[in-house]
Image (cartoon, rainbow, N blue to C red):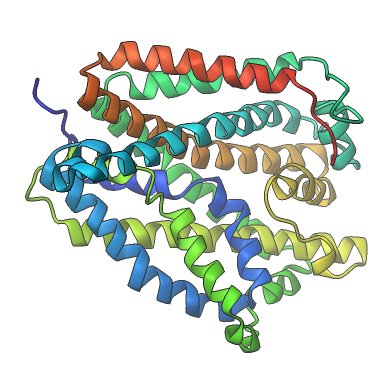
Amino acid sequence: MARQKWGSRWAFVLAAIGSAAGLGNAWRFPYMAYQNGGGAFYIPYFVALFIAGIPILMAEFAIGQGFQASAPKALGKISKNAEFIGWWAVITGSIITFYYNVIMAWIFNYLYHSLGVAWKDNPKGFFFGDFLKLTDGPGQLGGLRWPIVIGLLISWLWIYMILRKGTESVGKTVMWTVPLPVILLLLLGIRGITLPGAATGLNYLFQPNFAKLADARVWANAFGQIFFSLSVAFGIMIAYGSYNNKKNDVANNAIITALGNSATSFLAGIAVFSVLGYMAQQMNVQVNEVVSGGVGLAFVVYPQAISLIPGGPIVQSIIGLAFFIMLLTLGIDSAFSLVEAIEAAAGDKFKVNKKSFLIGFSILGFILDYYSLHRAVYIG
C-alpha cells in the first residue's frame, strides 16, 4: 500500500506549526520569559532555537522523509538497537494525549461558561469548586462531572474525525486551526494594549534583566522551552516528514515551522501580559502578584482579568469566547499530532487499518480519561 502524502507543501508546514504551537505557547512561554529575565530571556531562547531547536527539527524531518517511515521504523533502519527509542517517544506522546484531552474537555466547557461570564468575580472558586468540584483529600471520591465527560467525548471524536482520512483531512483542518488562533491572539493583543495598565504588564514581560543570563538555570529553561515547544522527540515530526516527497526542502520547512511557533509564543505573551497589567492596575497590586503559568493562567487568572474588562457582560463574553476558542484551536493540532505519531508507528509495524486503530485508540483514551475523572481529585 502506497504511503499517504501531503496535498501540498503548505499543508505539511501548517500541520507542523500546529503541532509545535500548542497550549504551552499561550500559558507556558510568557510565564517562562517573565520568570527568566524578561527581555533578556530572548537571548538564550534564540541561541537554543538556532543551535538546537532548528537543527533537531531538520533532522527529524530528514529522517522521516529519507526513510519514508514513522519514528520506530525509521530509527530501526538507522540502527536495529534504536527502534525502541522511537517506540519510547511515541508511547510517551500518547500518554501526554490522555492528559491533553482532559484539558481540551475543560476548554470546551469554558466556551459555554464564557457566555454570561459564569465565573463572575470568583474564578478560582468557580473553577475548583463549581466546575471541577474538587474533594478535600485523596481518600474522598469526587462525583463524576458529566459536562466534562461530554467535553472529553467531543475531544476524542474530533481527533478521530480529523485523522480518519490521514493527510487529506489533516491538511483541510490545519488550513483554519493554525491561522485562527493567530488571528485571535492578534485581536486579544490589540484589545489588551489599549487597556489602562497594559504598558506596565508588558514591561514585566520585555524589560531585560541581564543579570539573569549568569544563571545556568535560565539557559537550561530556554533549551527546555525550545524542546517542549517544537514537539521534537515525540515521533511527530518524523511521522509528518514521512508523508513528504524525498526531495522536499527540509531546511526551509524547519525554519518556517520554528519561526512560526516562536511568533505564536510572542503574540501570546503580548495578549496575556497586557491584560495582566490592566488587571493588576484595577486590583491595585503589582503585576507579579497576578502572574501565573499553566492551567491557573487559563482557568483562573485570565478569566478574572476578563471579568474586570469594561463593557459589561456582552463584551466580556466575547473576549472570553475568543480566548477559549484560541486555546481550543491551539490545543487540537498538538493533540491529534500526538495520536498520528503512534498511529503511523502502529501502521508501519503491525499493518493495522488506520480507521480501526483510531477508533480503538480513541475508545481506550476516552475510557482512561473517564476513569481518571472519576477518581479522587483534591487540592494538594
